[in-house]
Length: 421
Image 1 (tube, one colour):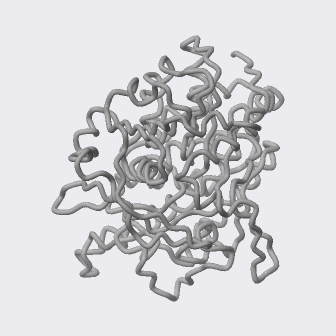
Image 2 (cartoon, rainbow, N blue to C red):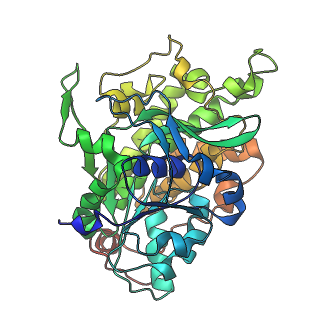
């Protein structure tokens, strides 16, 4: 698919947090015109002095093929005016938390221009909401809408003295990423457009590389085409890692300073909470996801049982190759300080009411038992004293797929044929 018309067009990045700010600098350092947008309530903090300081990329940037890009970049525009950010842009990257999607999409959709490509990362049902709102708002602009199952980095925005700086510390760069368009028939164009996003250069450089692990398993680097957008959502391993880790490891987090005598700022779920017992729960959680994907006739990324028994989990393979793992018997100081520092964190407040709840509902729709996933929702809700599933707006009806038969859902996912309720 020829998407070369995107080559010299600006990139608009929506979201001035860690992922958005890092992607903006990464693209600008490679010479792209980048417009960075954030909501007015966050822009004042996230864009403080950005026109003077630019955005600095630092950090170890570990990756299997050694790709690094460091330096300070100036973006063409940092604004809270979305119209200025997206006008004339070829690619629009949405890099915000899921709960912000609907408000952002309602503002974005009237501004769309024919030929634009929307990249949502991670998806967290964002493509369903985008297409739903396009129907609701009678938008017929011809755009491609797709998503990736994760962000291309492991990052933290540097804070000094309580101030959010314009330095993004990139610890890791991913070398493989799974994506798809909604509908799937647009995926060739969507995947081709990704080659015009310099923030994906570590993935682009790895495209087509195959590494053979010690066990003989083939590991494919580069862009991986998912089997429908539901594959992208179920392949997002954040819920299977974060939720059991945060719920079952809560004692370590809450006692980290008062009992264990450590500085709270050094806490890491990966470095201190994960353990063999939690890994067993994560593995069963993943088994339920595999059963669900099979029943729904969609794809799912490959995660092996042993991948859970590492402090780097399955993410280690994506960043550092198929044989990279840090056993629970070892300390791994690269994780120190990446949190979460309390239970009111996206590891719970996003991964439960969006990720886990979606799986639980699909399980009921398809007759697949999800007892571990359901227990995580119950325990998380109990611990933060809120009913996360009942409070969640991410019902199948909200996504406008709850009423569909299996055949109707497949037509919608693959061909974009929407069956109204």
